Image (spheres, rainbow, N blue to C red):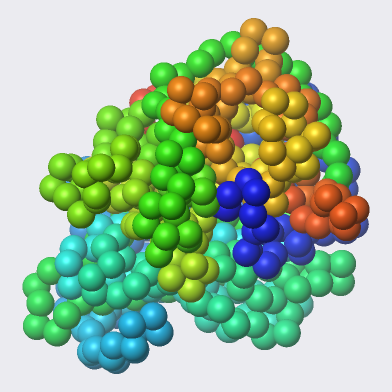
Length: 449
């Protein structure tokens, strides 16, 4: 999300977790192939992906598209609307159509929620994603904008939207958060509204293949239960260092020093045999190594957040490549990660730590993304750490107990002794649009379908 040497600009990361939530159950007690008790109680993932899904809800000008990868597209525009891009000052009219999902009741009343989506936005098109929630007292939130997104940057600047709050909940970049979870207030249900936009008179359309939300209620915790090692395997994931790009394209979050998220995304996209074409990369200075990392930084960049660490924007970028899907979720333990690695699915994880809390890292960070590619015979974590000084140094082995705790905790002490937040097991998962049976089982076991 940020350079390991910078202060995170994300104002709140897991800051509204429940103070009085029950103590987590050790994931080692979970039945094989099933979500752990922690996962069952703390996280609700729900996504609309099928032809039947897109035919439900309320459509105003949209249509469900059948096929191997069903989607949602514009049929006939519902009207025109003006949009003034806050990052360019340009005002333009756009045809639009909307789809509003059925209301989904969360199995986990949530203190936080993160939307993610997979879509294609040809030139001259873009998307807006909104969430309306139901509180535990039966009242409704406003319609919150969770993102204005396009895979390119020629029509609009992709952006999160600041200053959204009703005094009870707020949007922090990409995360819906209850303002004071200690009151017991929770999000119990929600609807998504997708607005598909295109230039007037155009026949092209955005197409959305997947949209949904991860709702969670992770308890306040400085430590988490230790899981028992259960897998020794390493996946052949390419290795890229963000520090190769220090000083390059400073308009995208001051250059490569802060590009842990797009660098990690690049590693897994290439693991699945995908990536930008030579034509896509023609804009990159030919003197720069690994231009695909520069490309990922540009096309994950959130112009409001002023960084490349918007979690759903990274997942959407990965899914813009043919045959890939991407979601943002939370996992409950390293046992969950072992299930994914066993099925050949690496993961990008978000963690924060002091230098002395992660042996061998050599740095501390208020927010950093790594790519987990496997486990040693002793159960230690094999991670491609983009904060390494070179591509050759990216592969690291980190102590299992240290790594699990810095990833899953929601509270920690910073270098001044102040209590600050942790990410509570956030990760990105990128996987094939047509997973194998083993991959489907592993994804289902961690709550993703």
